[in-house]
Amino acid sequence: MTQWTEGTLFDNIDKFASALGYDNAGVILPLASISWDSPSDRDAFINMITNKPAIQGPQTDYMSHADQKVQVK
Image 1 (cartoon, rainbow, N blue to C red):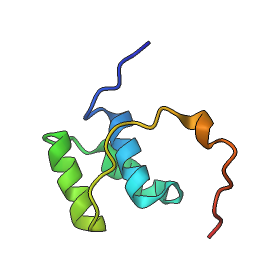
Image 2: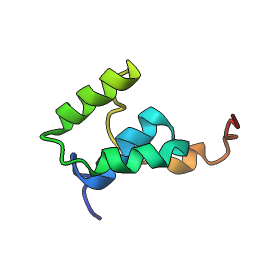
Image 3: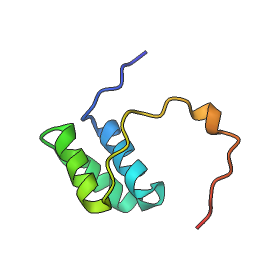
């Protein structure tokens, strides 16, 4: 099994999607593609634009949330 690595494209996508919402893919993908100096710089940027700290660590327990209903905006 592959280890989760901070600062990779997938990590960046996860952090931006968690902070901005998955329906904002048009903004998430370009921001995730930036070559951030470090994960902490990326997280500071997320904090600056959302006024909330970035969610730490990948979510690996997807099945525990499978029966939850998604809120529609």
